[in-house]
Image 1 (cartoon, rainbow, N blue to C red):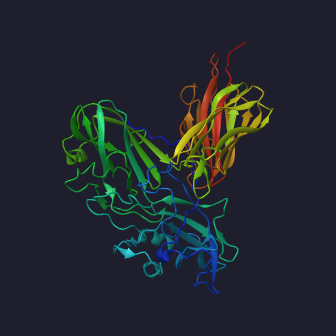
Image 2: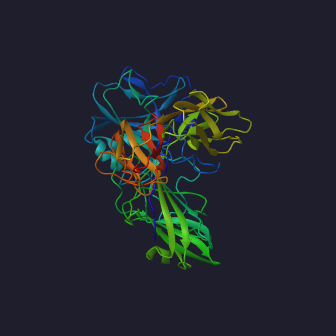
Amino acid sequence: MKQIKIISRYLQLGIILFFLAACNDEYIPDGITPQETSLGLTQIELFTDAEEFEKPVTRAAATDENSLQGSMPWILVFRGDNNNAVFFEVSRAILSNGKLAVPLTKTNSKSRLIIITNPPAKFFDGATDNLNLDKTIINAALSGKTYGQALSILNTQKLSSPQVTVPYAGGYLPMSASRNLNSINEQTTIGTPLNKVQLKRIVAKVTVENTATGFTLEGFTVVGAKQYGRLSEAAPIVVGNKVNYFAQLPTDPVSGISNGKDPVYIYESSVGETSVIVKGKYNGETSYYRLAFKDSNNAPMSIARNKWYQFKIKNVKIAGYKTPQDAIVAPPSNIMAELLVIDQSSMEISDNGQYYIGMSNSEFYVYSNAAQNNLTAGTITTNAPAGTLTKIEAVSVNPANSMTISSGNIVPDGTVKGMDVKVNLTNLFTTGTMRVTVGNLVRTVKVERKPIISWQETKLTFSPGYVSAKIESQGNGGDKWLTLSTDGIKYSDSEAVHPDSPGTIYLKVSNNGSGNLPRSGGVIYLGRKNSEGHVKLYVNQVSNIPR
């Protein structure tokens, strides 16, 4: 089965700001000072963001994958700055004077935090299931434990075996992150407005789409999924404890989980443990197929949190197996699918509490020495209501009128709308700004011309603070004329990612051999850390034709 692993063109995604509402004892009304504050405690302001799946959900009844408006976050504090840090206290975030804050004990010592947003009501500590996730039980479970030990104690509830419904369907997805603090006092914050703590969902998302002729997708499910997951990232993957997602009779066991339109959420799993079972009709005959999670080298993949695994069925050869059970034990066959893995996609989003506007990038660099027409400078997404005034314009253009908007007009209607905005550049253009206004929200994209790339091999360096890069298109230059690297030594024709901390991204443009035509249309996205913006490159290279 042919499968291709692709990272989305978008490299990181900012989140819509908080929509926090009072809800039983999980919240303290705005403006009220919490009673638990004492001389030994201080309120620490909390700034969090989520590395989102590619786009917000579009159906009101769907799981809210992007919002942090569920239960208030828990903050677990460990004294120390590594895995040997010892548990000290746990506190629940509150709303105080319009700000999200958490009461913590003051200290001059280093601390390591675990932050859990949209926390579940119950958890599994590795021995006992369905424990209340509250201060008393957390203190008892973690007393005397290190940060490293806590990672395996803080688990979700166990799923049923088989699991008859999709976990978190119609609700909120728990998210988590870790953070180190040098001290805790009145000047301390957890994150800042410009450097928010990046949260990750504790689950992966799986979807299946069909483009094969003669085949009708009727549903899908997941087998070999983990029975429970870790509430905190960087925890070891659960060993064993696998379940299949099968709906109860009289509902079909596969389409009863997903009819093909809704996603399925699963916990992290090891290489080769998890598969997808597809139900579909081929030439009038309904049967079942198995899809494996495999990379571009046909090697089995592990399943990671916060990633979106998109199977796109391209071709079906014959009818599949008669039952789901037959498909589970059979090798993937008679069905061809492309697997796209979207990790930390990337819109930069502004929100006013009623609607949002997102841009795919805030900078657009065009490597060219000639006029360019209909270049996509950025992609807009918004869910503004009908009647919201919108405007897309070119401003601060040098020289005047050398950049114009060639296409792009969004008509809000309250649903999620997305569109590309394209520009025309004359041969005199140097710099300009594309400004998009939706109601009272404004996003801008800086557009700048760079020198066209020489025919000789060229290495462009982008530093510091870059976390990842993705080649979206090689244009007309053929395979691998553009490659990426994080160390300047090993290059990839698809992506480059700094797994631990931001750093340098290298873009190599290969030598354009003698007699070759110009190369053009290479598109690369670069992702900076946290909220520092995303960069789009449009690369052209001159020909090497002897005179």
